[in-house]
Length: 115
Image: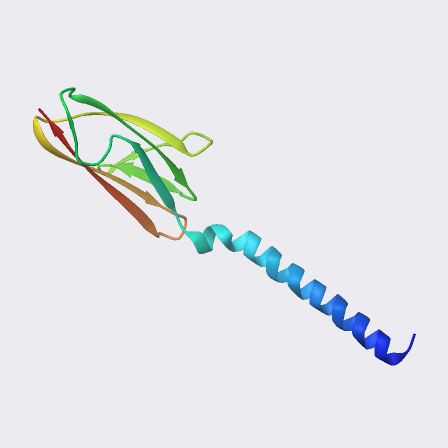
């Protein structure tokens, strides 16, 4: 092989290794980069109900802890959660907060009216 071909092969190998290192670094750091995620499935924000017992369901991803009205709750292995809550008559505010390992948080507020 000529020196020019060796240079091209060396550069191709170096680019491949560099690309692999960048991809692997992103793969390992993606949870830190993306931060926590929180989705509330029910009840819907602004909902009116006549049942004083409501079940809050949803899914959390990339979290270390999750709280419902400042009370720690727990998720299943797939990240879903379901907690029952008794509402007061009238206007209710429900807060679901999730924190990741470095303290970043995401918060969802659900406003619901019990008639």
